[in-house]
Image 1 (cartoon, rainbow, N blue to C red):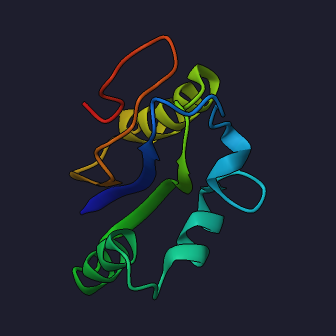
Image 2: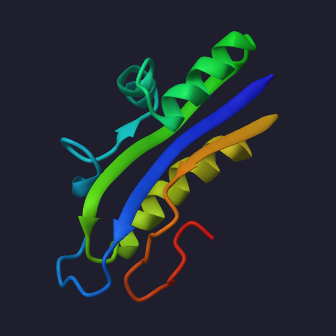
Length: 117
């Protein structure tokens, strides 16, 4: 079984003028690929639990991207597109299950009021 795992979390405050960039989603931007796996494995977070569950099932694990940004203004379209492109690229290579750690309050600048929808 092959499982694609990803995290994209942001609490958008639409009144904030501070745009949330790609770099806002981690120390140097989100973790990608094996770096996401290493950074999130063993954490007491939903994505950490996804990794634990996938390992217990002896699944092949693909960690597309993992990023969390502190509450701020709408997410830039560029950042949103990069998250989506990384996840879609891995899913297109085939998988049996997708596990997404989403927050549920993301607004993308000039695009959508429901970034996770």
